Length: 168
View 1 (spheres, one colour):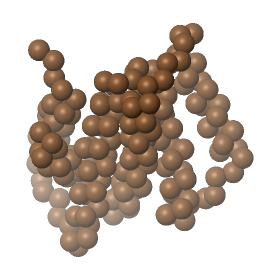
View 2 (spheres, rainbow, N blue to C red):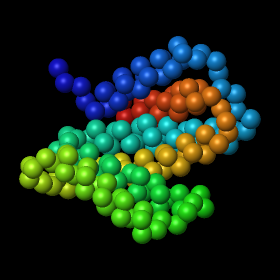
View 3 (cartoon, one colour):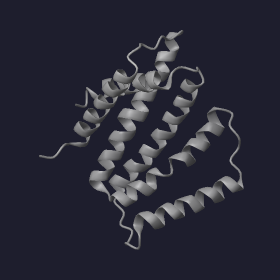
């Protein structure tokens, strides 16, 4: 029997949450209710939306396409960090390095095979990369609080699992 992308996602992160709980069962204590909002948004973007979009994209497009497209996430992350976190303005070296990296990823992924596009899957992969960029900014903010990484990851996973339930 085959598992749907949602079933794979749910099982994967539930097992991950349980493993993290076994390693560090202590509860993470927040100092402000607004901090919970960051965890909820990180769970929605980095667990539920990103992986669901990527898994669904793989049902429509080739894994090589999705792999190359999702590799664009650091590009989106840098642009969002510049815009929303007062990050450094990307310079010519950033764009040149990105072009070289994507070319290398493409050469490895496609390995001489012909590029075949599927608009549905490829577009879902682009959206997944954008969602991952948002998740990256959220986790950077969460990391700035200095909490235990296992506890924060478990809390993010918990919110992600919670957001999966309506779709499941």
